[in-house]
Length: 258
Image 1 (cartoon, rainbow, N blue to C red):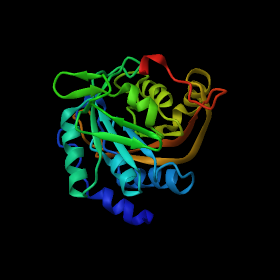
Image 2: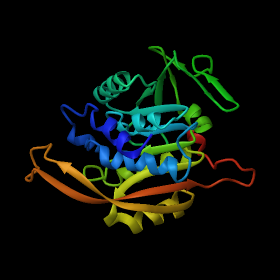
Image 3: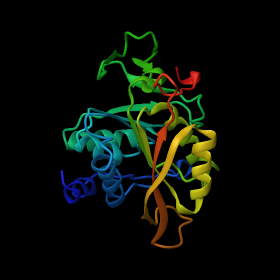
């Protein structure tokens, strides 16, 4: 799929009708989202035939882009049920299969838990996990997804909160993403935090590499009452992080995710 075609598909997606400021909900625009996933696929091969997880998926823009680019499975995770409903509608409109999961915690600090409907079955390479027979069943027809994620996810894509409401929220997301992804993490962060992000990824989160692929302009629309301008452009970096592997070739994982 060509870049312009991908951007066109993403431009037709439904977005937040009533965004929640406490969750720093801002839509990921089609221009940024298309270039983020197109780069991940065409420069690094991190999307097609891979299991891609969209952390804090919101209305599903990044996950939809991954599915359109041929991801084997796409898993969207968010704490907000209303956002997941919109993401589900967007996937249905394009006839895409995206697995949508609920995050039970906002901390994202290793104690976070995810829920996935029992009806889903994931198969990735030699790993076949039929959720519902894994021993993680909880009430309401869901299972904990933590252990599953760390076993099968190749690539994590995300546009995390920038931390204006909860300081360090973007770093909380990044810490968990690097524990889950086996191949790469693609994430957007304010360009003004570039040095901090690089140091945190390499020193604190065991990334083997942290590279800014490009600087983009994030168009923030007037969504909330405290916004005084109709729109503001914020400089953001598109990062590619590679998780560190142990001597046996496996990802160094936090036991709290297993």
